[in-house]
View 1 (cartoon, rainbow, N blue to C red):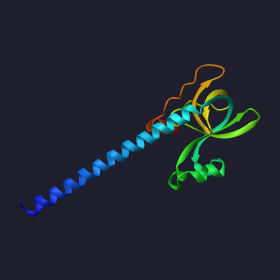
View 2: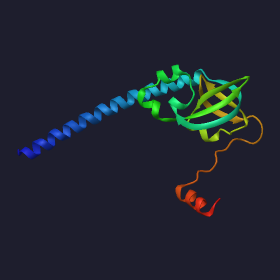
View 3: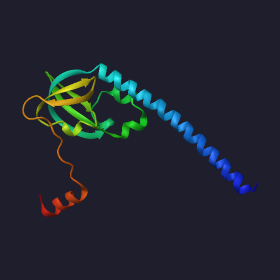
View 4: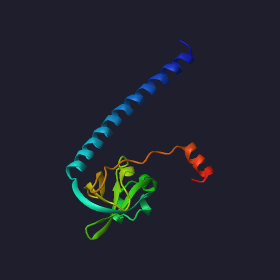
Length: 150
């Protein structure tokens, strides 16, 4: 056997071991995420709220309580999260929306939402038509709109 074939075999074994470790770790993380999602859904309760504002902003700039920011991993603090300011009863609260439903949340309207802690899981319209997400505008369409002045 030549040295080239030995090196290729060693590299192949290392790659296969790495893929096996990644698959095992990925399955473990997926099971953790599923159990966390089940706990979140079990603690969910319906709330009626008036949405004041919504933005995607960094976690450190979002106005969430300090204990929430301190409990998040350092790498996640710089990522942008969908933040919703809403009036729930007499209090104004800052909530985090699920990425899937963020586009459905209407601003300056009353909605009925399933909330688990500070996390909005689902929304539906309290009055008026059903909530639908606005159509996504692609890059080229945005450029056309800018040029034409729309």
